[in-house]
Length: 147
Image 1 (tube, rainbow, N blue to C red):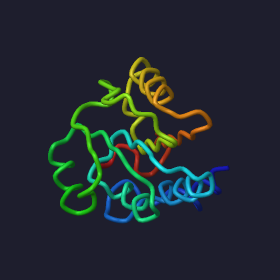
Image 2: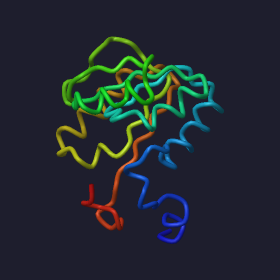
Image 3: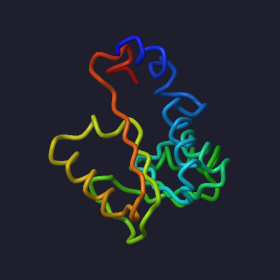
């Protein structure tokens, strides 16, 4: 399993950069296969993972606590993406339901209660038969604690 993980997912540049993460590419393929039309990205950051969904015709809504990240997203990627400013711990920001939710490298940053609330809040905004994808960083990853 460790070799599979390292070959397919561990990339020292995956956490930061301007290219989408491998998990965003894989999730985009799943969402296209399942005809997902609109998604929520809690902790959208500066938008690099959102862009791959937009380029493939998927409407994206994001949540981001950093005003700097929102400004970067709007400058580089997301001129037509609705981004709510605030913490994911304050969800929901709207009463809309989404076909898909992509949550990248966030859940491991929250404590147990916050993780439980995040998953519940995401589930409550998911349409029937929708898909949620969460990625987390293991403490065993070479890039854990960096960045």
